[in-house]
Each structure stands twice: as structure tokens, then as C-alpha cells.
Image (cartoon, rainbow, N blue to C red; front, side, top):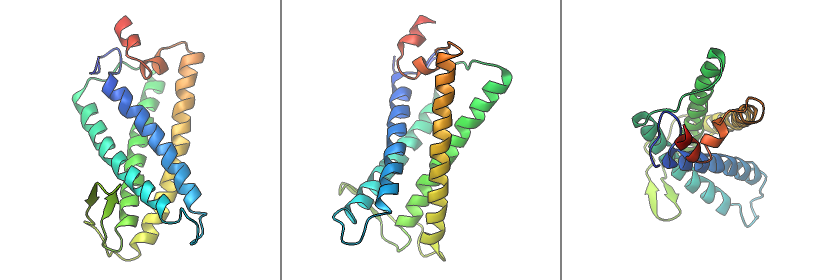
Length: 184
């Protein structure tokens, strides 16, 4: 089952969800670690290269994910009206923060007018550069938005676990496998 249904997520949505989650957590950890590197550290130039490359790939995957989500049905949500609205708002905020983090990272990287090399495969051009204090302002936005994104992602995880363990709903199972969708 590749496509979504009203009873469950399809394989494409599931794959994009988990790849995004791993990329966000990995990029957060890498970004935090690389801020402590010294100039003569072996990873001083290599870590940002990895961070930027994975970030650009995550941006492409996120754009594809939004396009896919707009063309697919959304599985029915569980819970009270409040829980459903909170889940909808939380998902919207996750997407918003994700794009703020990715776009601000792009602005940091292109502030001097240079494109971003993605693993040496291709380069993303610097479409916006030379704004006053671009790297500094984008850096602050990037840092705080990344923290907010990770904190919200932890809340998202806790909510999924609550629905799974306490409410005995298949909310989490539907994001792990398509089998739950077939049973309904």
C-alpha cells in the first residue's frame, strides 16, 4: 500500500515521516556538536559540509512530503475535538518550524553569495545574499527554531506514545506499518 487511505498512512508517507524525523534529530545533534569545534579540529570544515548537504536534501524531501500530503487523503484522527484540533495545530507548527529552520540555514550558508554544494553532486545557488547581518540574524533564527522544532517533536512523540499505551489507539502503529490500515 503506497498511497494513504482514510484508515492509514501509505508507505511513501511513512518513509518520508521517519526519514524526516531521523534527519531532524541527526542535524540537530550534528549542529550542536559542530558549534563546539575549534578551527584546527579535523571536522571543522567537514561537519558543516555534511550538515548543509543533509539539510538541503531534507528541504527537498520536505517539499515532496508537503506535495504528497496535499494530494493524498489523511487518515481519520482519534480523540476529542480538542485533541484533534491540537494534533492538527501541532502538525502545522512542526511543518512551519521545519521550513523556518531549513530556510534560515540556507540564508546562513548563502550570506556571502556562495551556493551550497550538496555532497559534491550538485550545487544550490545563492538566490538571497548580502542582506545586512544576514548570517547573524539567520543564525539566531536557525538556532531558536531548531530548539523549538526538537522540543515540539519530543511532544509529538510523547503524544503518539500516549495514544498507543494509554488510549489503546493505533495512531502510532499506523505510522509504523500499513497493516493497521488494511485491518480497518
